[in-house]
Image (cartoon, rainbow, N blue to C red; front, side, top):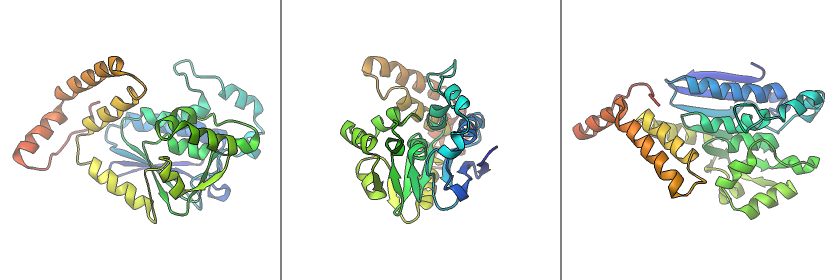
Length: 264
């Protein structure tokens, strides 16, 4: 795997961008490997959460144009959506994390620019170090963001903020990102914040957590007529499952539940 490291510890998959000498500038291979890693996590039912982070001084400085520019034919090929999806290879690097049936938490520090920010916005939560600086930097290159940002940012902030940041490419700090709803929290130790959230989530049924994520990913843009059937179907699956029974029994007995692996 090229410059993407993967390790599971205590039921948490740790995925790291591992090109620190280039501030984790993204190569085409790294984008492909991120999507492949999301698929790998999805198939591991023992995993309860994912932490996305970057080695070295930054989360990611965005697409490495010096590297990617040497593969223009591949770039054009990667812009074509896959047959089984509306997303192309660039978009899958960020959006594939939305289909992973466990919470995905991006831990940000240093630079979080361009494609790096789009990958972070594809996570369910983002915790940023106080010194993090962010930018939708594609405007600098005369481009628009094309790695799934149009879908992810719409769930997080207002349209005028999205237009402003995309049109100007301006750099903003973590506290401003929090005010705009682009990050979930800001502190001196975002890894600690991520771990604290994961510890709370791991106390709940892995099936209920997976169903919660699926519920909102499949209904966020829908009205009640389309959303209610999805909500009903997910609840029926949970009620028939082992982990819901375990949660009920433990709750009534005032005991800590011992869940089995995720069934959903």
